[in-house]
Image (cartoon, rainbow, N blue to C red; front, side):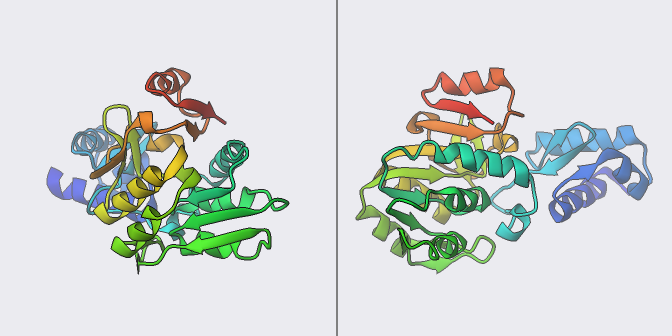
Length: 253
């Protein structure tokens, strides 16, 4: 098996399982661990994976994106802590945008139920979570439903958003970097996120530490557009400080 075929199999395994380990790959491919490490370095250079201690995980791109169902199985305790901390930014907001994705869905679950709120969302899953709360008015944006994320996109979605003035937006991304800002693989999704930020007075980004430094296909916001970034304590404090220099408060939980 040549290097190209080996690396193709590694990427396929990472996308199928969510991560790969050097030891297991070496045994499966019948090569030395150092060969696998060399392959992972090459794949990282091409933006296909990001290496971790002892392995790697796939980078989302224009041609690959994890599904909502998959996201509900990954880093759940971390995402719950992030969601709880993000709700602290609610303050006196009465109208909220909640993005697609699992962490935003957890934010929806953590919202207070003893005060009236109006929540705008493109996510069918988030709308379902909130619909049972009597004090919450849910506005589900119309449009084409994306299969993997169960969220709406395209001009119907952005047209509805353009008519709102929203107090606070909770936004996610597939990648966030100091150089390229917030990115996502799909242009249609990027446009919805961008319009939500334009419609909102305040924007809070929520995402696990593995999002940082990752860059996807479509940029939809700058770091300076954010009031706050809420992530896990696994993001190094020095890196958090570098992001804060561009404007937002950075909370590590």
